[in-house]
Length: 269
Image (cartoon, rainbow, N blue to C red):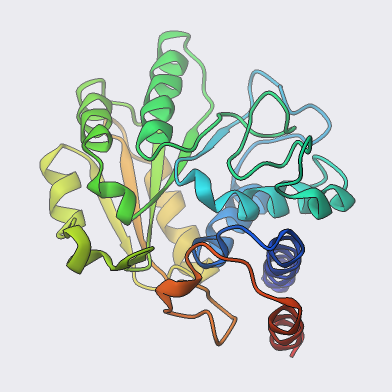
């Protein structure tokens, strides 16, 4: 457990540093999903950083593509590419753009950006795996605000229709989007009832920053025999940085030098 916690701390520090250097990016939703990616890449998923295109690897799709910094920091921490590359976030010509590009970034399985597109692609990847008798899993991470997209529910319906038990989706349920609380902008609640009505196996994690709770949920999801699973994770936007926590204003802006210094001091404490 200590290893995962230390790894999550390093990923958070890299998120803050890279977005601060770029003066642009999405820190809130990146910090809220750190534990989910840490558990997947450092414990649960079958991936090989030395062979990122291995046909038998598990796949991960960041459907909330604007949270690219958490994926970049995780992949760099895992060794898919050098950490120094993180300093080039959102720079002209860099492989690390504001949304993940599967043609440029080692370890990125799907290019994402337009909300709802990622989960749709993940459904297709899971269906292809089934048709080819593959044993790998497909994981996807959605934002709760992303559930406002109609495209999401077409994909959810298809996943159930084709009984894709090899698909495990996460919802980063931090309750905030760029314009405020998601229930005020356009409520997607009740999330669990909606997925259940579409035929999914639904698991709720009350603390989406608890590795123990996340692990139990993933292990249970892997045992689903004929349904896709969604793990709804209750999280805190901007987790572990006091002035970013539960603040919609940090959905999509970079911290200045002084704010980076304060954030890193808090993460080191």
